[in-house]
Image (cartoon, rainbow, N blue to C red; front, side):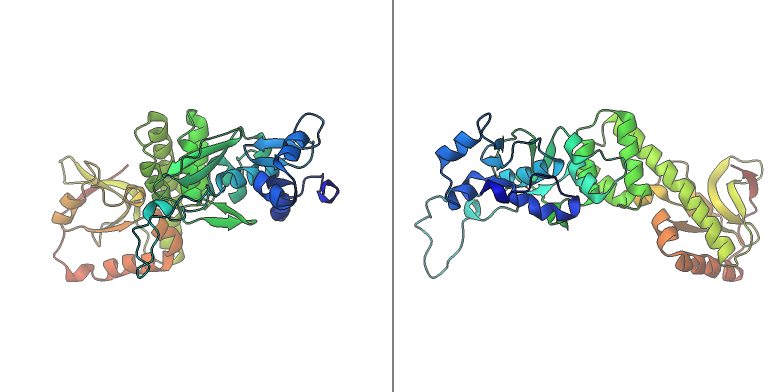
Length: 348
C-alpha cells in the first residue's frame, strides 16, 4: 500500500492528490488496515506519522503545508458516530431533529485561507503554527496539533480553491486579525486585502464587526489607515472622472464658508459658478448607514443652496461614467435652482 504513496510534495494545483498520503484511521480500516497495525506503523521507525487524532501521514518525511492543510480538513470533517434516532418522529412526517442535522462542512479560514487566496504577504502554509478551520458551533470538536478549531454560528459560503473549501477573503482576514496583536501586521493585512482588490472595505469592516475586534486600538488605527489610503486613491479617481469625461475644471480640496464666518464644510471638488460640490464619502463606504462625522457641513451647505454630490470610492472606481453623468447633470441644472448664497473658498 505504501509503495503507491507519493513521497515528494506536489504543487498547490494538485492539492487533491494529498489524499493519497494523508488518510483517516477510518479510511485505513476500510482499506483493510487494522487499528493495531496503524498504531504500530505510526510509532518511531514505523514509516507513518499520526499528524492529528485519527489522521495519519503515510510517509516518514516532514509534512508539507499541503499535508497539514489536508489533515486539518480530515480532522475537522470527521463524521461523529450516529446517535440513536428519536422515536417520537412519525413516519408520515419524516424529519431530522436539529441536533441530528448534518452540520456545515469545515471551511479553512484565517492566514491559511489567505495563503490560498494569494495575498502576497501571507507566509507559506508550512510556516504557519496553526491552520484555522471553521466548524459549526454545536460541534464539540477540540483543537489539536496544527488544527485550530474556530466555532461559528454563521458559517460563510465557501469558495473552493484547488478543491479546498476556503472562507471569503473578508471573513478570513477578520479571523486572522482576531489573533493578531501587532499593529503593523494588522494594518498591512487590512490595507493589502483592500488595495489588492481581494475584498471591499465595506465587507471587511462588516466582518471585523462580526468578529468583535473593532474596539481594539490597533484595529481602529489600521481601519483609519485603510480609510486614508482609500480616500487618496478615490481622489485620483475623481480627477480622472472630471478630466476624462470633459467636465469643467473645479476648485480642488477646498473649505467653504460665508464671508467672515466660520468654515461650513469641505468639498473635494467645487464649481462656484454652479454651486455644485462633490465629496468623497469613504466612511459611508466602510460604515454604511452611520451618521456623517460632526463638522462635515453637508446639511448647512445644502440649506445655502449648494448641490452636494456624494460618491464612495467604490462608485468612482466601478462606475466612473455614471458618476460623471451625475456631476454633469448637477452642473447643467444649476440654472433651474434658486441662486445659492455667496460663499468664500479657501484651500483645505
